[in-house]
Image (tube, rainbow, N blue to C red; front, side, top):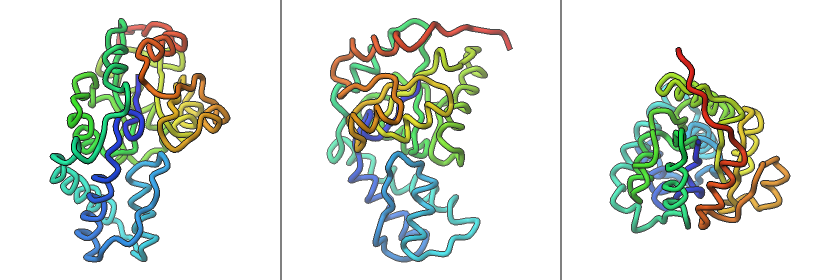
Length: 235
């Protein structure tokens, strides 16, 4: 079970933008004029586009330097997360309810870098339901569909579960999330809590579209409908 983070579980956009501005200044010595829109993309892609649209010619060291600066800038603002951000309606109860299902491993598939994803969920007490070691993150330079398959491999390695399209579900809020699930052969529960409309999520190919996560029983029923139990296999 893989969850997108931003606008699916939490919304900390104000803090994220401030951290990006700080990181940009650290790396380039210049103020940030324009931040590339997220639109479900990984931090690595947002960083490159942000540098480009602000007139920075990138070199091999720009991405790792920016990721390190972004991690530090975000961590410095972690006490603002619950004040300036919010947990999405129903997210905690949905995580708790899915965690009660037999054989479920919950993690995240997110464009956010790992350290920041952990801080985002910790700020709202959501981290206890997630195994961050088997997730996929924004500093890993893979297309999201490939990153989903990487996460499946991590579950196999750590838990012995063979993951495929019959027992892997992505829950996210963007059409890009839906496209990643379709390409990777995973089931998709789309939540119309982000910038993609219900119609756009259905058109992208989501198996089930929910308006939000406020009905935990509805979320659990959707997961059960789309999956069969995980098979534990040796090796």
